[in-house]
Length: 76
Image (cartoon, rainbow, N blue to C red; front, side, top):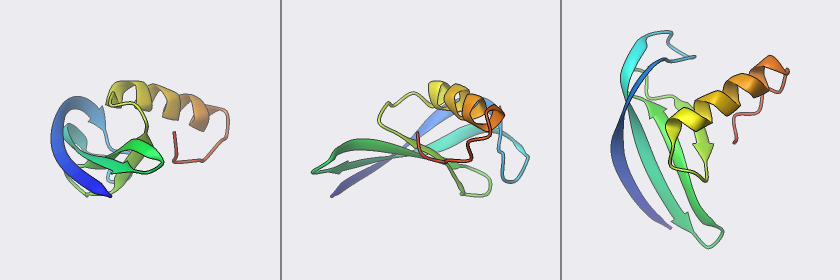
């Protein structure tokens, strides 16, 4: 497995620490099953989600739709 860590500018609120964040850490994970991106809060370092798409904003939209529908899954 190969890992790369990068930063991405955002303007959102962390659902864990409830702080406004302007930066998320993006960890690119390459393995035999493909590439996934894990997003972490720059304040509390908790996982904000995992996606096969490197677009944090689309992950946030999907997560809020799933939470609204009652699906508590953290995996996108």
